[in-house]
Length: 227
Length: 378
Image (cartoon, rainbow over all chains, first blue to last red; front, side, top):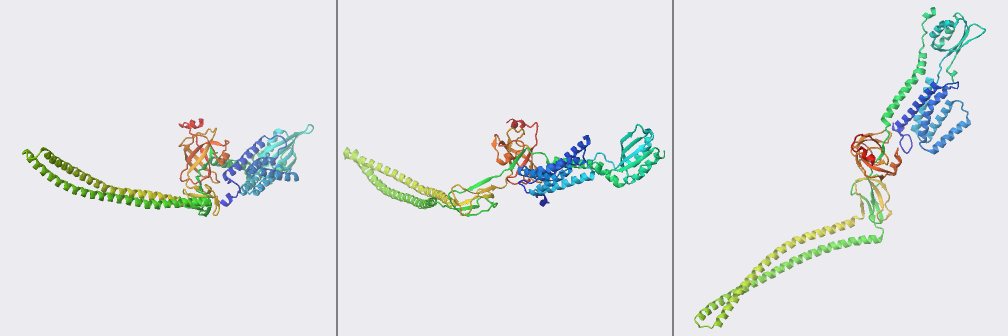
C-alpha cells in the first residue's frame, strides 16, 4: 500500500487523513449550500446543473488548494490553463465549467507529481459526479407526466378525478386551472409523478371515461424538462 | 362510486429504486459522509499547541593542529563507539611537525634522564649513608679502644691517688703532690665519662643512619615511579595527537573533510550525532497563554502520513526566553516565532522517533493546577 500512499513528490508527506477530511468536508459543505439554494431559490432562473456545481465546486477548489500548496507559480499556471480553455470554448453550462476545472486540477496534480492527491481527487470527483447523476441531485419538481384536460362540470366534483390521479400517481400537483368567461367549464393542467409510467395510456383512458371530461392530453416529461 | 374502491396501481421495482435514489439516497449519503468526517475530525484534527523537535546532540570532531588528513576511517552514517579512530592527521606545517616532534623527543629524553639520574641519585644517597655508617662504626670502635685505654689510665691514676692520699696523711708527701695526683685522677674519670657518652651517641647515630637508608630506598622508589608515569603519560599524549578519536557513541552524520585534504587547527572534519536521545525540545512563544508546568502530561503526535501518538511528560521548563531554531520558528502555527521559553519533554521508551524529527505537541490544559498561572503570567 505504501507505493500508493507515498506517491506525492513533495517536501513533506501528504497527510492522507487530512486530505480526505478536507475533500469530504468540502463536499458536505457544498451539499448543504446546494440544499439551501434549492430550498430558497425563487424565480425562473433555477438550474439543476448549477445546483450540482454548487456541490462539486468546493471539492474541486479544495483539491486546487492542495495541489497549489502555497506555490504561486502553480496558481498562475492554473489560471492560465483555465483561461485558455475558457477563451476557446463557450461553456454555457455551469456543470461543464466544473468538469473543465476538475480535469485541469487533476492534470495539474499529475503535472506537479502529486500523484496520490490527483488520484484521490479524481476518484472522489468522479464518485460525486456519479452520485449527482444517480440521485438526479438538484431537481426540485420531479414529475414524469403533464396532464391537460377540460373539466365541464362543477369543480366540486373534481374528487372523482383526484381519486383516479391518486391511484396512478405518487404525487399530483395542479399546475394550472383556467376558466373562460364565455365558455363553461375549466381547463386543468396537472403535473404527475406516475406510479408506473408505462401505464400512462390506462390513466388517460380512465380520465376520458369520466363524465364531463374532454380534450384530454398527456405529455411525457423526462428529467431534461428541468435544466 | 366504483372508482373509490379502486386500489392504487402497483409501483414497479425500478420505479421504487428510482424514487429511493432521488429522495432517500442524498440524505443517506449526507449522513454517511458526515459520520466519516466526524470520525476523521475527532481522531486526527486536534490542532497542535506547539511544534517540537526530538533533540539532536551533534558534536563537531575537530583537528588538534593543522596538517593533512592521511586516513579517514569513517563513512557517512557509520556507527562509532567512544574512542574509535575517526581520522589520522599528518602535520603539514613543518614548524608544527618539528615542534611536536621536538616536544616528543624532549619528553622522552627527560624520561630517560630522570630514570638514570633518579637511579643514580638514589644509589649515591644510599651508598653515602652506608659509608657514613661504616665511618661511624670505625669511629665507634676507635672510641671504644680509647675508652678502654682511658679506663686503665683511670685505674692507675686512682691507685696513684689512693697511695698519695695515705702518704699525705702520714705527712710523707707534700700537699701539692697530693693535689696533683687528685687532679689527674678526676681528669681521667671525666675523660672516661665523656668517652662513654660519645660511644652512646655514636651508637644512636648509626642506628638512625640504618633506618634512614631503609626509608630513603622506599621513598626514592615511589618518587621514581610517579615521575616515570607522568612522563610516560605526556609522551603518550603527544603521540596520540596524530590520531583523532570519537568522543562519544553515535553516528557520523556529516563529513566535512576527506582523506588528502589540508586542514587548519580546530577545523571540523566530521559531525557525530549522539544516538539514543529521548527528549523533545519545544519553545513556548511570547504571548502564548498555554499553561505549562514540570510533570505535566502532553500528547505527542508525529507529523507523518500515519500519525503515531503517545503521552509524554514535561521534564523541564526554561526560565527565560531563548532564540528558537529557524525550522521551529517558521512552523509555529499561531504565533510568529523568534523567541520562546524552552520546554523539555521526556519521551517514553516505546515511542519510535528519530533524532531531529518534528512532532506536534498538544497540551491538555489543567485548570486549578498550582503552577498553571505562573508561566502564563511570566
